Length: 477
Ligand code: SAH
Ligand code: F3S
Picture 1 (cartoon, protein in one colour):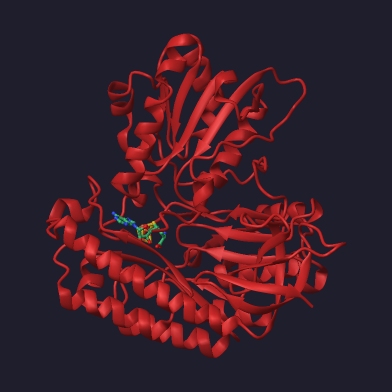
Picture 2: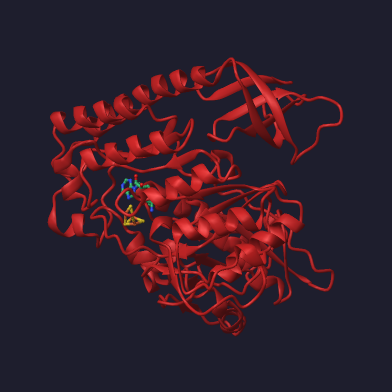
């Protein structure tokens, strides 16, 4: 099962790049969970870089250990607890080391963390990273420090993230924070607070900076990108050409997406995550209009049953979801979709489960992220409903959903065969050091033999001649 949005191999991977020669202290920073956490870690590294910390990959030389944590499922929290336990001996040998917990678990557990985990000195929620320098001073004086205040405004718009451990080719740019949707199963509205949109000028500036630094692909990030909405004055700086410049009084997601596409015409643009309830056809038209916006939509649905969707407070029906998919297929050439699916939500019957499977067949998703429902303390589902589907039953349903997605993925991958696709080279294939790996516009991964003169970050035309369940096999044309 694919647990997260991020390449599985990157979960919990520490990364290092933030180097200032004058810095003398070492930060070991690990991230767990969604892309947003990885992006937030880049903001944290940037703030701490100004406070005398360079990042390190060797935990043994760290003065400060930070884990940026995830609360989305119980298993995600267990992973972090287990990781913390591994630092116990280190702390015994080197008591001066500071151990901090950031992100969603920090926000959810607050002071409980300091009580339950003797090892932890510092607890910082996702909206309080600017306070890190002060909090670290408190820990230097031997006190535990905590800031879990959520903000209605904080977007870290002015902080230039340090690009950590990336490939120098693809990058995230955060456009919204928080979520107001209140899906009944979800802890995110409680851990990441109210939804807010970042100033478009600072988004465009960050995108242009990335382009100038050689990046070739940007993923606009938010829990719910389609509800991006910014109100504010006219352009502060000349990021757009005069012909493209409008008086920016209000900007919605479709407009922002179009502005980004124009501002960095040689870069590919992706975005995540969309919520079917907030997605508008305008976004599809914007994708169709701009060649550099990828023909791909990640559109979580969770269930194919109207009854379950309603209990989840997803605010759309099966039919509305399928209509959205149909319109996207009509408007965007060769569009592909991926899903998030959750099995075993409270009261889910076999019939509901079958509706999930039938919806998957109807849409033919390229791939998906599939989960068993995990009850989260404090959520509406936890308060009002019973987590009544037995673990074994959840497991069986999940296995069926995963098996079906496997079939659909294989079929979709076969559909890409026999054609030429543009691939952005993002790295070297893990299985074969003589092959590149990259993605086509529809987000499917493609591997192909290296040719002389090709390099990381090149866009190359690749003829796809075969596939496995999840990967396309090709050769440069
Ligand atoms: N903001 C995104 C994703 C949020 S979390 C959205 O709109 O969908 C990512 C995925 O984790 C969700 O889509 C859901 O499938 C899964 N998830 C969230 N809460 C969960 C829970 N309590 N148990 C199991 N899976 C969960
Ligand atoms: Fe969670 Fe639903 Fe928002 S899944 S992040 S509450 S859109």
